[in-house]
Image (cartoon, rainbow, N blue to C red; front, side, top):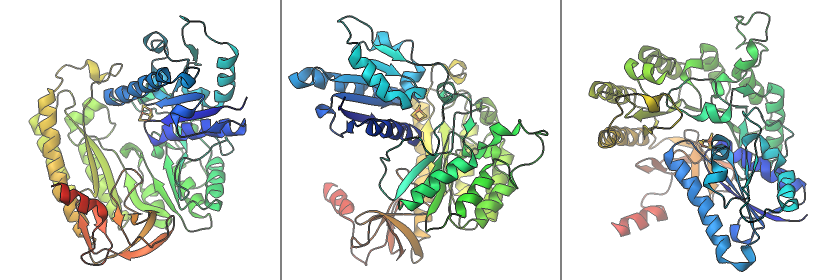
Length: 471
Ligand code: F3S
């Protein structure tokens, strides 16, 4: 059946890869995938369920698609499928809560999207029938290098999901319950995929999973002696993977996202330092610095460990930009905890930093903890840390002025440096004539908060002019 399908992809890059896998399978079956939901025969909403606001966003999209199809006569036969983390997490409740949906599919059913669509058309629902649910319990699936996939990112950058699931016990997080236990791909599988992407012209490979530093560790216990160190040599480990990716011929960056502080090693620091294709950038969510909070969050780290690790990373990888995130307002957080965090941020001067207000998520242990922090307190703690980081970010940006920087051009006039992950960090405004999707060497002439300018003096990006006029 030649159908037109539209996919609305919400949530993180891991979910985006799942959307890409669905599109790959749809194309393989001869179906066309179109951006306009109102012109599609089938709309798939690939949802996120991380915190309340992401659930709300997912539900709003579902209701909006349903409302739109009700408004146009030609759309009334349109099918609505809900996939992703929300469908996986609430597979028992959603069919009753959202009867307007035609089908819900779990995370491991992304490769079965075509037979599922066929099935929905084959068995038309009678009015009043419940939506169909395609769900096979706990998620265990992981893509391989030959899994059909159609990339939604620009030609020059791509995500590779090197592992899926999470074994960490963080008390605030629901993701392990949604995405299942950690399972890694093989080094060979990831390298094959990366080779293919580089051959297609990709200039930046972003390695993702729930915890990239845990890559391979789930396979270690199958070794005769699980204590034998394998993060050097031939074992399945991130260090082995990075060295093999670095050996692929071509001009490209490898970017490491979502690392966990508990699994960093000196060998990993040395490997990054010795692999020039690995971007001088690490994403390492620390969540807090006070032992009181780290203990309650079950982060498997301590303040002293984190301080020492950041110092070792900075000493071992010259020029590294460290991105982290913190949570404020976690149950039981005191003023002293926040003071300690503020002092740590002030001293460490992270190149990139985000702060989240704690969100009380049903199904997590933290949600049941006493001493939940009042919304107003969370808010004021968040403002305090963000104001602090704004000054630090200005100092970091100022330190680039007058220096040469290699950038990857994203769109005419807008680029990113090694210290900027796609869709997360700042931008570098460059000459519009620089070719999109290519590396260029520029000199930084100025900055504006988190963004850098590599433009002749007096020339400003259009966005700034518009912002000034609006003031
Ligand atoms: Fe990502 Fe949201 Fe799922 S953050 S892993 S899409 S819950």
